Structures are given as C-alpha cells and as structure tokens.
Image (tube, rainbow, N blue to C red; front, top):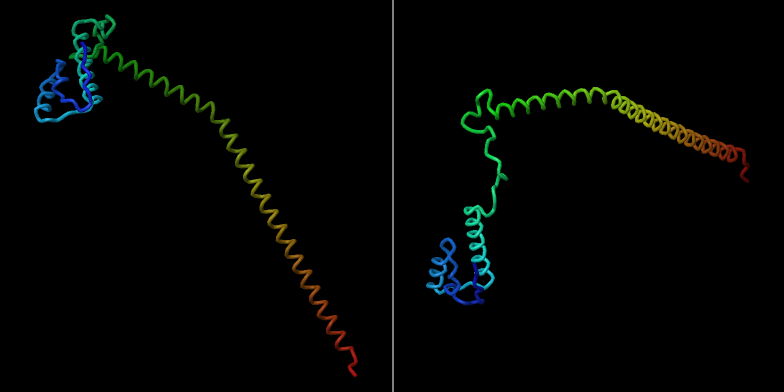
Length: 174
C-alpha cells in the first residue's frame, strides 16, 4: 500500500488517495475549506492510518498467527468460575496456601534473626552510653580545671592586692 508524500503547503486533497478509515473524506473537507498541512504532518498521519489498517487486515486474515500460540482459552475463568471445583477456585486455593507458607516461613526467619538484631541493638546502646559517659566526664574535668584556674587567679589577685596594701601602709612618705 503506497502512500503519497505531500509537499509542504500543497492542498490536502491531492494526498487523499489513501483508503484508510475516513481519511479521504477528512482530506476533501479540509481541502474544500482551503486548509493545507505541512508535508510531515499529512504524510505521517496518512502513513499511520494505513499501517494500522494493514495490521488489522493481517490480523483478520490470520497472517500474524495465533495470539495464544495455538493453545485454547481454557483458563477456568468463565461462567462457572465461582464453583468450588473451578479452575479459578483452584488457583485461589493454591495462592492462599502459598501465602500462608510464605508468611509462616517469614515468621520463622524473623524468629531466627531476632537474637542477632537484639545483640546488635544492645551493642549500639552500650556504645552510645559509653560515649555519653565519656562526654560527661570530659565536661566535668574541663569544668573543674576551669574552676581551679579561676580560683587560682582570684587568689593571686587577692595576694597582689594585699601585698600592695601592705607596702603602701608601711611606706614612710616625707
């Protein structure tokens, strides 16, 4: 199915020779109104419509093969799918059983992992507490050192003041 290429600015009616789902009628109406489209838009739209039509025709003719690869549609899903022995109910029971097994296995795995995670959490807690004690001890030592330095400085200032006062009181002014 060959598709014409429309020159830019050419009326759309000249490109309306493709017989794909109503496109010629639209093209004629647009041409009658004096509307033109660029080559890219017109050619692409007509090409897409032609390709879609060709694919639909190939599917209808069987040229594309079976969508189920030759297998029937016996999935068990249908009017009787809610019956106790239907394929759907079998699949549902199997899924429920698998979910129960997986849940039970997850519980066993968590129970097996719990001692390890508890020990790791305990070690983290002890490490954090030791760091907090160390920070507290450092802070206390710094505070005591600073307090001792301030006390010594105050004592030295008092001693200098007393010495200065003693010198002044014993000095004979003439």
